[in-house]
Length: 70
Image (tube, rainbow, N blue to C red; front, side):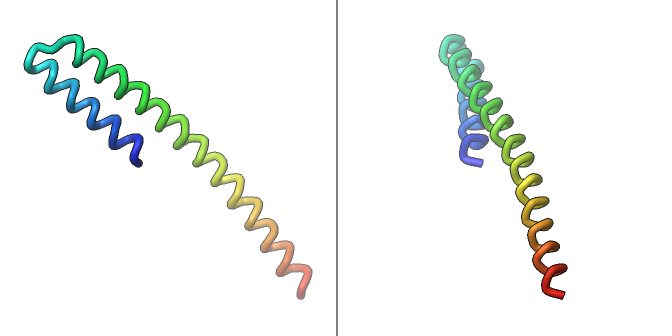
C-alpha cells in the first residue's frame, strides 16, 4: 500500500505542477507515478497468485492430515 500511496502523491504533485505551468516537473512526476503504479500492480497480481497457490497447498495438507488420523 505504501507504493500505491507514493504513486498517488506523485500524481497530485504532477497535477499541481501542471496547474501552475511547470510542465517539466509535471512530466517527471507523472512518469514516476506511472512506474510506481505499474510496479504496485505487478506485485499485487503476483501476491494474489502466490497466495492462492499457498492456500490450496495448506488446505490440501490439512485435509490429508485430518483424513489420515481418523
